[in-house]
Structure formats: C-alpha cells, structure tokens
Image (tube, rainbow, N blue to C red; front, side):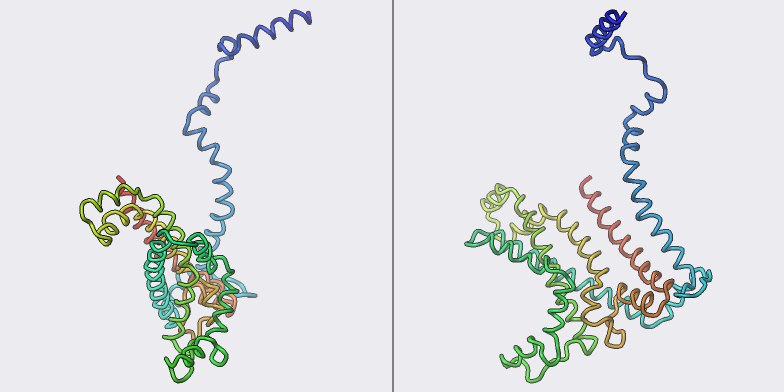
Length: 319
C-alpha cells in the first residue's frame, strides 16, 4: 500500500504543473484573488497602524478642543468656546499675523537662496563636492544646539554680531536684537532661513542634475541667453520638485517651535509668538489644555488648503 501511495504522489507531483490535479477555487478564494480585494488586504495592516497611531490621537485632540480642560480639574463641554475665546484674545490675533509674516518671508527667502545656491553648486569648479557636503552643516546640526549658538550671537553684552558691526564701523552702539518686536522677529527669520536653506539647495541641486543637457544646447543654438534658458528650460524641468519642497518648507516653517522658543519664548511681551509657541504656553504654561490644542488646530485648515491647492494644480498641469 505504501508503494502505491508513493507512486500516486509522484504522479501528482509530476502532473501538478499542468493544473489537472488542482482543486477548483471556492467563492472565497475567487474573491481574494481579485486585485482590489487582495490589494486592500495587503495594505490593511499599515492602514490599521496609521488609524491607531494617528487617527485616534487626532480625533481625541478634536474632542479636547471642545472642552474647558484645565490641568487638575474636571473638564466641561463648551463646544466652540475655546475658539471664540481665542479670537477675542489680542495675543492670538497678533500670533496669526506673526505666523503669516514669519512663514511667507522665510519660505520666499529659502526659495531664492536655495535656487541660487543650487545653480552655483551645479557649475563645474574645484572642490565642488566638498562645498556640496559643507552646505549641509546647518541642516545636520540639531536645531536646539544651533538656536543656542545664535542666542549667544544675539546677546546684548557678549554677542558677536553687535561687536563685529561696531568693529567695522557699521553701527555705533549695540543693537538689542531680541528686545523689540521688529528686530526679534527678523532675528528669528534669519535663523530659520539659515537652518533650512540647505535642504532647498540640495533638493534643487538634485533636480538640476536631471535636466537634459541637449535642451540647453538647443536653446543655445536658438540664441537664448542665460536668463532665457533659466526661464524656459531650467524652471519647467524642476517645477514639480520646487513645488514639493515649497510645500514641505511651508509646513516646517509654520510649525517651527525650537528656534523661536529658545530665542524669545514668544517675547518680548508675547509679541513674537507663533502658533506652536502660543499653544505650548497655553497648554503647559497656563494649564489650559483645551485652548492650547485649539491653537494648534487653527493651523490645520490653512495648511490643508495650501497643500490641496498646490497638489491639485500640479495634478491638473500633469493631466
């Protein structure tokens, strides 16, 4: 009997590739073989993980914005009361203006400096690889450490910036960089641009490497100058990369916390607050968790609108 069984098994193994001995698929197996069902099953573990790690905290945060939640006290449902109270607060309205000024000026400066730096580093010169790596240092250094260095540079007594300007005869007395709204916000913008511009440079430099050389040769044969080549050849080829890094830069700039908190902590007199620092002050400084989270959520509709508009335009242009 054992010999007969082994013979039948050998026959099945030999003839199985032909499909004659495979049993017919049941209804469940046929459904699982459908691409849309199988694809969903493969993505389901990651989707469940995202719902647990991102979806639940997001919904919980929305619920907390509807509560009069203070540390160590009972929470009371107040609906949109936190948002109404925030809008009546002049510090919050000032924070909105600061965030817009800080974000717009910083992102524009990063685009201009990043594109300029990428075009320079894309040229052929000696030690270009060294400078391409060296330009990443501000981006690599931890933000807290770099902000502390800039805090010392802006110091009223020992700051190297004021001392250097006096030594070169540019100014006659020290500038109190972080003591008024205008100079403090300008100082924050400078540090943010200095830290994040290398990301723009490297990303745009990588995009410039993919521009076909024959397009420049054709434009040169047609008599196009450097400005015309940049406008009609370079920009169209790196446009989508520029849009993506601008989106990332806008999100990172609008939600920046470390640099502002280290340099000014929202001062002087709450005049340099952005959304992130004001949310921290309300939630952890004053113990108003509901209001602090509500401040953070005011960024969400604006960021969503910016991202949706840019991605929609990009997809429309591609189609």
